[in-house]
Image (spheres, rainbow, N blue to C red):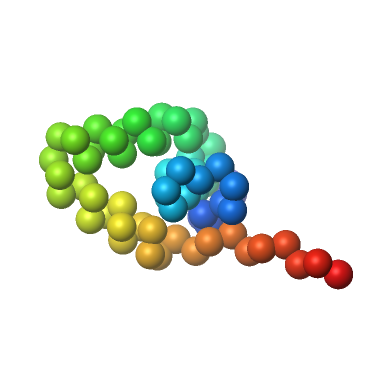
Length: 65
């Protein structure tokens, strides 16, 4: 399994869905659709998204040597 970190590329808003999809090796699009449905159906689902955005670390930027 991959590390749980928000990638620097393939982000739409903050990279949370990309991080979850990469970590569990599932379709990023599927994760995004599930998040959209959770936001549309019960609006309280935005709170876990924001919390994940805060707590999932961002991918390290490449160092130039």
